Length: 522
Image (tube, rainbow, N blue to C red):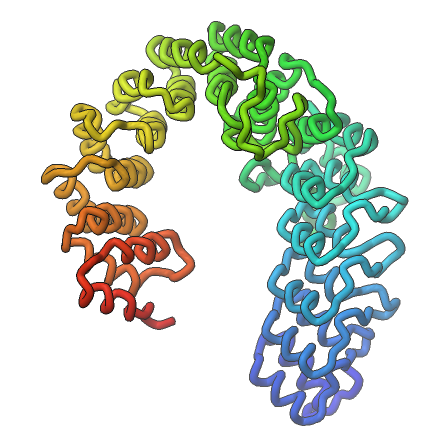
């Protein structure tokens, strides 16, 4: 610190920042501490608060006059916005940007907040910066544009964000992504750290699910302390698929399939991006390829083929994510590609047969999901046939597929859904309750099934049941809605569902009571 005096306002200011004490920070400022104060290493209080994720303190310091664009540190190369971006401190970043932080300001030559966001695979941070005016193509260190950095990271979410904000897809970014396809990421990271070997060093690795990709982290540990580390995401095949679509490159269907199958997980971006491109392409060649895949004996290939078939013939907005439609229909236009004409009538029989003949639960789930996505009533019977499957993922797929598809007059189907509202699996009960709430059918059995779910331990299910009862003017909904509005998180699904359900309550006194309900302790 600038002074070692214990009562010095500057010392008190930094102590407040490190301890996270907002009140102490206010006292230090009132006692005369400068909002631009620095410690003995030249670090500003604002940078420290930003990097430590103290959004309240950041706002206080900015209000007191701290400059959001002032660099700190001994070499003057630490910007508050960059310090927040490295660690994904989005609330801090919003405060800094609102106070005038320049999103493209460099802290080192070519190193900006967007550089850090792309290096770390933080798509939410990148989106915040780009929305604030950051240049998506401004070269970073070594002349490398952000898209190349994000491609090397293997972050499809970051690449999508950059493309959405106008980044120009380039062969360099595509080449970076392709270089990593099929690479054992963990083994490569271990090799890169191997040169630092020494006495007592241990290499450890872990994998973190990022929702669509996995981040592989490899670290060197000595005596329990971190010596060095490296990390990389695993979505390079998805990144390549995204960039190829954006550049108008028609990747062979077989190559896209192999990318998905190498990944082997229908929930990963490598799989879903390949599916989305093929669905949007939707021509005869694609249909024949998908039909051949479902006709093999390989369950994983069958599931991939079913996922592709599920979206053929549908409007573009119902397909998987992607940056562009290589056949000329704008993504999100709601139009069906001209090549899709007549495909649904050929797709549904294939999916019905696959669901009927498959033994692997993953294949059945994909086929059932496809029948639901095609929205053809001809598939309802086959979907219902799997409602009692031993695998909860299949039963979950049945409930999802029936939503918006099951006719209100389908007595067998309604009985089946009522049974699924009692399923032991939370997800199955949740979707089945939603199906029942939204069906046009009504009657004592339906109302009782919904009323039974008012005692469900899962608040989201209780909220869906209350909504279904409110839509039917059943007074049993009111007490449940009142409890949810009083006890649940206002930012959560149960609360928002209950809020929407209030509009169906016609009793004026009950509605006034619900409108006046305030969340407890908030």
